Image 1 (cartoon, helix red, strand yellow):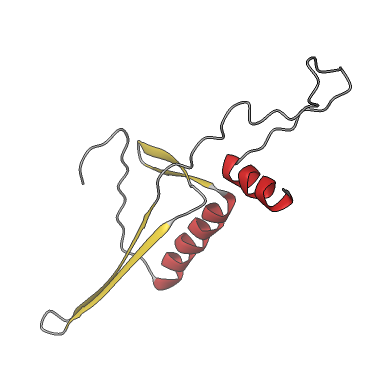
Image 2: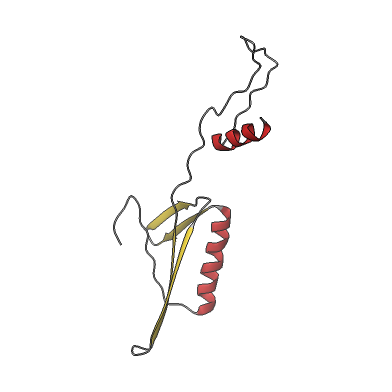
Length: 118
């Protein structure tokens, strides 16, 4: 495994029930959005993005009497929300204190909404 900013490796032989426990625990943390993996003196914190890629490879080698199942999960960090958003106010020169400012998280959504309303 190439050494990046942080890396973590773990390997064990276990009963199928223990493996299922590991996978169920991992699934709960994926749903929660982050997981910290620790074993011995190694530890890594992973924060998931809204879009995660899953690759599954399965193989059976009858000559070696061996089977394998590999799961690879990968993602790129979610883009940060743009600071400031869009400000909407009256067409007069100076805003009044009672005007509300509207921050829009996704500029493309604001453009689409403006087109549909206009």
